Amino acid sequence: MDKNVKNFTFLKKKSNLFRLDLFPFIILHSLSLIVYTATEVSDIIKIILGVSLLLIQFIVFFSKFWSEVLRSIICFSKMRTIENATHVRVDVTNQKFKMNNRTSISEIETKDDLTIIDFEKEVYYYDKALQKFIKSKYNTARPIREILKSKSITTQEISSLNKKFGQNIMKIPIPSFFELYKEHMVAPFFVFQLFCILLWVIDDYGVHSALL
Image 1 (cartoon, one colour):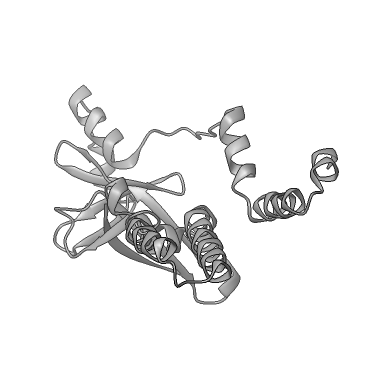
Image 2 (tube, helix red, strand yellow):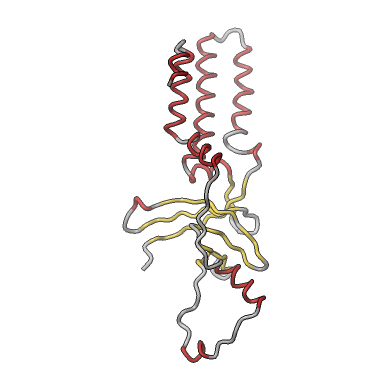
């Protein structure tokens, strides 16, 4: 019995302008300019407001690299139907071990009359009758007499089956240097280190931070 319960949520990718790590902050920064130009506001309040706003935007921007759930909220809009969706968020809930719960976002691909996603190196196709994605499985419960009467498949059938089930190969993608570098650059601990170095530079510890 499969102890993992998969929940599929249809998503549509937002344009870069309307992402939650950009559009709200354009408005907030515009309002902050009004505060900065006001002569009756003290300089301390201006500094606190500016630093707080930049820090919040900094956290929101990097949070989409730290969590797929937050990424789905920041960069995507929920769709009720698959017709307008571009991606699917897959929430896997383990009934026995909560530590195995995970979330992933997969891009929707359309091949001929099949709508599929690649989730954890396995092909899932959209069943219109059930209105959900189902893992591609071959019918192994066929009677022996039917299997013995099987004939060779055509090239067209091979192409169709490859689209539905995928090829019988194990793909192990090798990340490039820049992909690995980006992954380390946006890691929470590395971002925390950069933030500490920035504080040291502001506090006239530039040489100390450069040596680190």
